[in-house]
Image 1: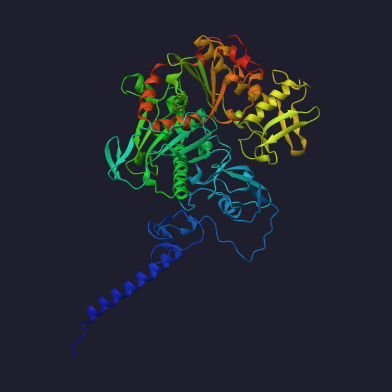
Image 2: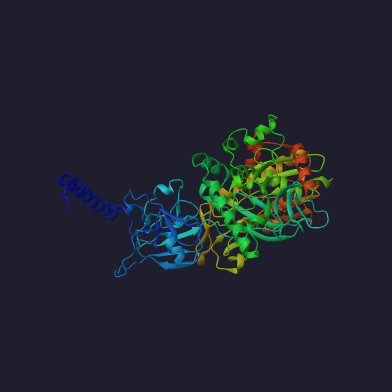
Length: 631
């Protein structure tokens, strides 16, 4: 029998003991720091959200990316509710007219599930994608204070996945930012389909070409996407590039609203929180693209070109450009500065879809129509394409009404343009009972000697007034001498007028003041551009009225309060969403693309505020009365 070496034995015993001690320490550490919901495959088995969850590329389930070095409990959004607890609440949570009883420890996203309200997310509710932004219309104090993931949000906006309800005895009301109001998607323009099609994308012998460069095998469809990115709304038109026909139209409220309701606020916000506005828009567009694919049974790789129309700020944010210069004198984008300096041959933009993060064919390209000048952007260029401006010999006027209203007067030989910062008042912003054009919005009113009769969108119970309803109300108040041109009620001491007492809807002097300033911006733009061109309203052979609620406005009402120039009503043509129509036309025609690139170079742009009598014109425009027939 071999003699045991005591020293060697002791050494090995100590080593084994050390191994067991290490195992105990490791087990103790794992029990303290490794999440118990993380299995041996590093998959998360929890039934609630955590910031360490990631989607698994293949298959189903969630991957846990926690490093097992931090206290996992701080990553959890909320503890699982105790099913034995009998906490009773008196508060409810409401969204889109649906209500649910409050219970402790749940997030706004959890309640969205309960209410069957769709809230977007791509990070599995971990607070990282920033897509689930909601507006808290009531009950902000009942929520946990915003955390680090919500540092980019202001006012009453929250991430649904991070906003935990703490006070269950007070009512809460919220609404997602991505909603579907009545957005004008059609346009009264010539049909873009037909034998004259000349798209940049073609196919032959089973190969797809972009500008004669091979980019893909033919998969069965050649699709293009025309986008109108407005401050308030977004419209996406899916087009068959072989037939010129529209396959699908999607529209939604621009989810960037958390950055402010007007251009200047968006510019300021983008300077402070770079990329957040763009991030929300791209996420919304990608979601719409994937829904189109599912509805029409095609794959995103069959989208080969995207054409974008939008005002200068919206367009440049979309293309990842800094927009701070647009908010400072002389209010020009970096792209326009480069063009004026001669370092750029055009203000149009072309970029690879990959760089912008859009879900389309990896070799697809994104093209934006050119800018005109300052805030008069690619959306107005698209409007001009839609009305075939090179063929207009007589004097026409284009008014694209929105948060920023653009006015253009002229013909194929000479044209003058200006931008009017109207603000969001006629889209519901800053008006006590103003609202976008959702079901339940009052779109017209009539005074019947004792009360207001009204019509609402979809015939639903009135909740407030949208743009067309506000213009209708102002006109009715003036016709019946219930309000002076300066917005003072018949009873001069009255500050608030009850419109629909049974629904609690009122109209105040402050509301009238906000609308007067928004109307004055529209008034100034039309008045000064007409005068600068050297014509009067009766000289206009056609007034093309484009954009949002303008399609639903009663023309007589709008002219009587000075919202529109007194052009003969027979000469007014409502052309709907002309921007998306123009973007579609450019998508389908190389000639129209080249024509508008050349045409915008000759448009004369004027800055309204530099006009010597601008202030006097603005003050006159604040009154609710018609614009003079002679300027």
